[in-house]
Image (tube, rainbow, N blue to C red):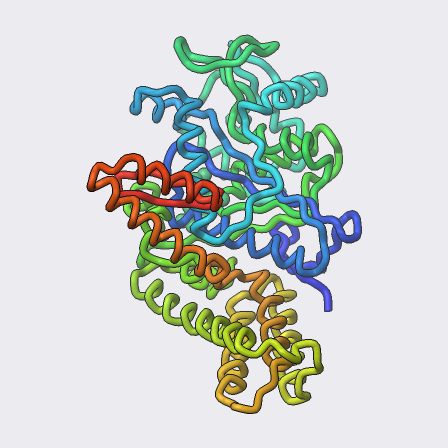
Length: 468
Ligand code: AMP
Ligand code: ZN
């Protein structure tokens, strides 16, 4: 078996071969941190987490980078609106984003480089492009000279003539060619800025990813990911910038997730406001949201509806229940787990796992891989119904489930459930103490929770907690 990935650059599924055996370098474009994550943004977050988990399950060491765009026009506008600094806007929404990742059962990235912390690398990159003739300055702005890069358009297969026609309406006289894009923007009076060889300003959007990839992962990465709207112009520009300098591919495989729609409508940012991950995860468990996202292939459009989420909840609960019942039986009778499982159970588990991997290896076909998980649920329930099933059977069941679930993570909350009950009890007790103005008991409980690794936060919706 070998993993096949649909590579946008090739417009075909290709066998995945990392540059260095056992090591995968992966970069996924991250958010601009000027607002809360909406459910559409959660799709790439969950999809690429699953991809990373599967690559790890195959024994690879994965360097998984995703950036934070912490300065741009939208950030500046938000800071003005909130009457705080751009850096404060970033801090606030990065913290909220990280909370959301926990609520979605997503593992933290290996690294989250930020634009403001990578400024010297970005400036250096633009300088090198300028030295090679791929960039030119005009009035403190710096543009990429698309006319010099013959492959411009190769990823998105844009027809440059059409493209030129499309942008002819708004002719920008500072550019040599209308499809040229900005690498560095001169600061307007009063805006946040950094010193550069072209005067005070800040980077354009596309350059950060090229600079961060080169700095933290190297010349060519194995997988570059993002939503399909990023193909053009963002990823096209990333290719142009990096490949002009290195002459080598920026990434060997390009993966793009299709869009999540609201009902049957294309999701827009304005619609997104009502559908924030922080609100959805307050109502639904991570496992439910992940089930919903992964029960569709990542290259197919997906419709988000209340009914779809409720139905995902039922399915995810069936899986979680089977897992916890198997665990419970093992806890009741741990003797003999080291022995061999019965051949009937062992054979079916082998078939389930091989089916699971066959589906996953076919360009991460998670909806079909989930049918293997349901075959497991049936087998688990049949085995649970037998009074003479051995501990070895349950141990084997659990191992198989763990292998599949390390990838899909459909029950991430089960791990924490027992501890959570104790935490909830202490929080309720603390709320009562505060109501009675018993501040010392309230502080005592906060310290106690702190020593359990739990942080409390007052939010407009009430007290929330998270693990440190
Ligand atoms: P943005 O916040 O628009 O920069 O998007 C961050 C990431 O979410 C990018 O990879 C986008 O392609 C992706 N994205 C945004 N909206 C959606 C959506 N409705 N469905 C799927 N992916 C989306
Ligand atoms: Zn990017």
